[in-house]
Length: 390
Ligand SMILES: CCCCCCCCCC/C=C\CC(=O)SCCNC(=O)CCNC(=O)[C@H](O)C(C)(C)COP(=O)(O)OP(=O)(O)OC[C@H]1O[C@@H](n2cnc3c(N)ncnc32)[C@H](O)[C@@H]1OP(=O)(O)O
Image (cartoon, rainbow, N blue to C red; front, side, top):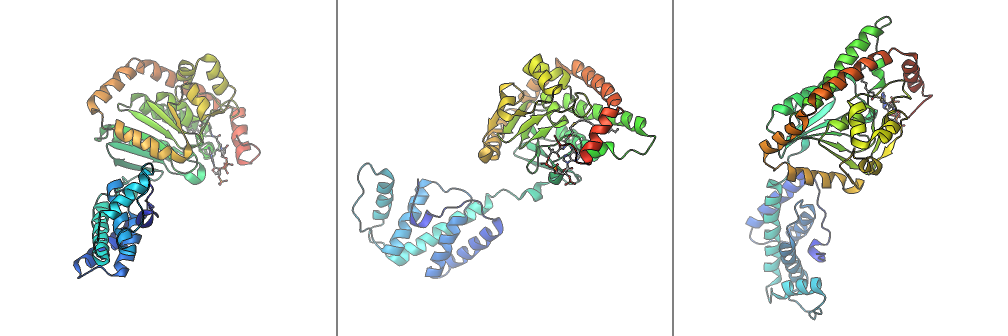
């Protein structure tokens, strides 16, 4: 309901510190002898800072008190029977009868003060307060029975460094044991993730390439293994484009929600590499042989809607409402009976576990060879010399 006057500048989302300060000053004025015009103006500003919508009934009350304070008793004709909103506003104002302007002003200030106090006590703690310590490349938070693991290298499009692979494994290990019901993986910034950080190939001392490729294959096997074995519902919140391994492991998630700005790209052949993340098995199963080949062999980039049509993505949301819609949905899901949810996940996954581990091992042994090939090295050099971009 759009209400003029007192609530016409309704703007949720202002910072808690100014809100709390204004609530305090309103509280102090409430205890004084009577609300001044300044208190009234301050209360009007305070209304705009409320985060929680107080509901139509309270908004009507605020409107009526505002009109009574600024114009006195209701002095306009009653709106027609079909003009429902204006009629409700008129009725609320008219119900105040001959209430003196000073009393209406005081009541307005008192009402806003009460609203502000309950608003600030119900505010969500800033994310920094809930952040789990110990991660350099991730932000890990837990709230509402959901643990959120956010990749946090936005300037590098959340490209996965060796440290990041390790931290994600640690965060998953911790989340499997915490009291959360659902675990989310997402990215900070405009990308979900640009996949493996190609610098991982550049830090190898001369003569150590084979050893490093072997270590890389072990790291990748363990990384993908964590997703295969993860016991709780795993949700990918794809906030933007996704590349390489960040796409292939999606076949191991339970839900994949994507912004309509997201794209899905697995350019392995262009990079002289081969599929990983169990995608050589999960993608043909999910989307059929022909579509999987187009992505994994020929590097076809899919839009979010195409990925959804092919079964890789659960649902696509407009970017403008993506976070709000997805988190509302997840908060509702997180209230489902926890044990039943986890047991259902395990019965689905247990049927496939052995096969997935075998696929993971095979993909990594092929990749270990690929990383030593000229095709792969040339592609990496070419990216850093800026001759090639995806
Ligand atoms: C032998 C040792 C082996 C060790 C192996 C360890 C485990 C390996 C596991 C392998 C598994 C997976 C394979 C894959 O994931 S393949 C996919 C690899 N990803 C890519 O090829 C993407 C490369 N990036 C791009 O093409 C573009 O950056 C972009 C993503 C299309 C974005 O383009 P843009 O123009 O919008 O932004 P840009 O200026 O390029 O990027 C901003 C800065 O970020 C850097 N950056 C982005 N992505 C990567 C990346 N994947 N690796 C390294 N750096 C990346 C980019 O260089 C810019 O940096 P700067 O600002 O110039 O310093």
